[in-house]
Each structure stands twice: as structure tokens, then as C-alpha cells.
Image 1 (tube, rainbow, N blue to C red):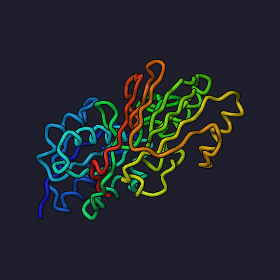
Image 2: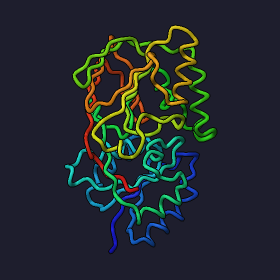
Image 3: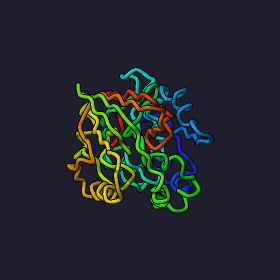
Image 4: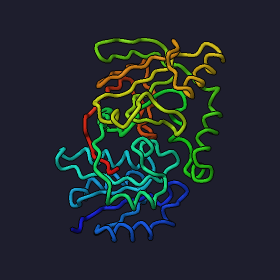
Length: 297
């Protein structure tokens, strides 16, 4: 039986590889009995606006791009009632594709397209951040602006290495923020250089989070990791080593799971949401929305 699909793609994402593969992808989808409507993005938030206006007219919505486009898609879908939300077929074509790696999607966009027909909807939790939603991460502090400050041209030329270069360049600018964190009936206060609230198994294409399987993506809980202020270069070295080894037992870290968390700072600080700028916020209230959206895996 034929199904309708609204397919939106970013022509410049992931070195523009999607343009070379479009003919193969559309041929694959039509062979699998999808009647496909295609829309290339032309501006920022184009994906969000188009899905918001048209998604309910289709059986499946498909998005091909990076994690930022996935974020726009999730924000569009979350406007609808839970039983109205169409499943998302995500074809990753970005530089890091953290969410795709977490749910086991291939970075080969042609392979992803071939597997959509046989795939099953997998319900994922989402996070609310003020009036925004995120698919897998909200973060503040060191290096969080690298994802949205690194130019698309640099990403397309050097891929994930572009983020690493930009991160190294900013090592000398790390500043601590005094924070008060309330979660699960506990209050934590101190100076932190980094914090992330995640629903993912991978961040930045570099290290794994505390989640151990896809079950942690729809358990109604976030994994929270906070990194305390460094006193000397040895502390910074220990933090980097811990992130590689995934051993966060040091006093430099605070880690726990929570379904809701409030973070307050002395002054507004920039946040990143799924790799995109989330605004300068003094008090962030973050809530886990259980089984919020379905992605085909």
C-alpha cells in the first residue's frame, strides 16, 4: 500500500553529499511504495516552518541533514498532539550525527534510505527547554558555542576535525559559572565550567555519555554531567582523560540521572541545544518528555 512522505533535506549539510545521492534516494523510496514530496531548505528554520505547516498531511516525514535539522524537525512535531505526530525517518548527513549514532543509524545516506521501509518506529524521549525542545542534548559552558560558531564552510571542508580545531583554539578562554542546580529533591551549588543534560549515547562524535544502551533513550530520565572549575592545568588534563576513559568518579565531576532539573546562574549564560544556539539564559528549567516522538530505526 502506498504511503505519502514529506522529504526535506539540507543541500549544504555534510559537505553537500546529499545532492549527489538524491536521485538514488528518491528512486529507492519510490520503489518502496512511498509517494514523495521533496523540499530543499533555503534558509534557517525552513525545515521547522515547512514541517509545522504540512507534516500532518503525510504518513511519514523524512529529514536529511545534521543534528540541527533533526532539532527543527522534533520542534515541529512536538507542536502536534501525541497521537498525531508522524514518525520521523532521519537520514543523517551532518558532521557529527550524534543522535543517529545513538539509535544505530548508518552514516551512509543511501543505506539509510534503503532501510526506511523495513525500519520500525522507535519512541524517544525529548527534552523541553523553556519554549523549545531538544532531541538529545542541552549544554552550557566550555566549548558549547563551537558547534554553532564553526562556519558551514569549515565543516564542509574538514568535517568533524573542524570542531576539534575550533575547540583547541578556545582552550585559553574557559571560564567557570557559579550555578545552583536543583534536581530529584537535591540542591548542588558550585562553580562549573561545563554541564550537559543528555538523552544520547554520544556527544560531539568524541566520547560516550553515561547511557549504555538505546533503552536509556526512552527511560524517562536524563543523564546529567557537570564539570567543576579547574584550578590548574593538571585538572584540565584529568578532565580530558576522564572523558576519554568514561570514568567520572573524580571530585571534578558531578553525575546523576533526573527527569527534571533547574539550573540557575548569577548572570545569563549561553546554552546550546542539539548543537544550535539556545539563547543566553539565567534560569533554565529542563523537563524530560517520555516517549515524545518516533524515529524509524
